[in-house]
Amino acid sequence: SQTIHQWPATLVQPVGSPLSLECTVEGTSNPNLYWYRQAAGRGLQLLFYSVGIGQISSEVPQNLSASRPQDRQFILSSKKLLLSDSGFYLCAWSVFGRNSPLHFGNGTRLTVT
Amino acid sequence: GESVGLHLPTLSVQEGDNSIINCAYSNSASDYFIWYKQESGKGPQFIIDIRSNMDKRQGQRVTVLLNKTVKHLSLQIAATQPGDSAVYFCAENIGSSASKIIFGSGTRLSIRP
Image 1 (cartoon, rainbow over the protein chains, first blue to last red):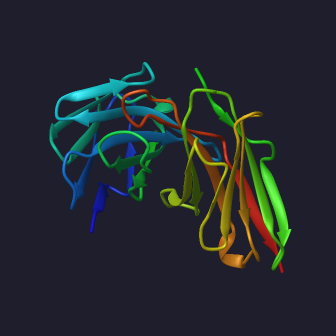
Image 2: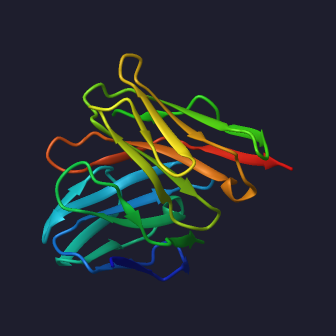
Image 3: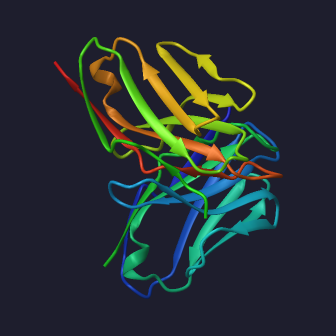
């Protein structure tokens, strides 16, 4: 069966520090991969999605970036965090192609202080 | 950009009654829709999906209805239970060549004993 791992579960970082969140998927090949951010009490904002290694689509201009160095690995990064980067970051995967549901990890709660 | 919206931010239902959560979408080209359930501190959990060539789909205790004429989606939960308490999101695929899923702001469902 397929599983998705996302870590860390919680993170407190000072303003201006770098960020690296990692997500890996097991049990499937060539998945679509996604990063979402969720503000408290709000919906999910699509940040990045990827349909293959090295292929990243950015949805929202910001100081975050994403990379997909391996087929089942998706990394969210920032060189310098802002206070507004605080939130709940969720990684998800879906079967390659269109019209298949997303399966989410348990998220990372990021607090920028 | 296009967005998925919800009619009600909160819904209170008597235990045992049926719950109906509504959603309006704005992208008439969307052809795939999903409902998710999110419990506090967790990632969204897939409930049910529907493609635009259907107007109704049933799962275990849940039914999704799609009205493309008025761009409306609903989730019906039969015999609502305390464990159904959560935030429910509708989502749509606005991508043309890949699954690009965007989410609405969510409806919080609370169950009265």
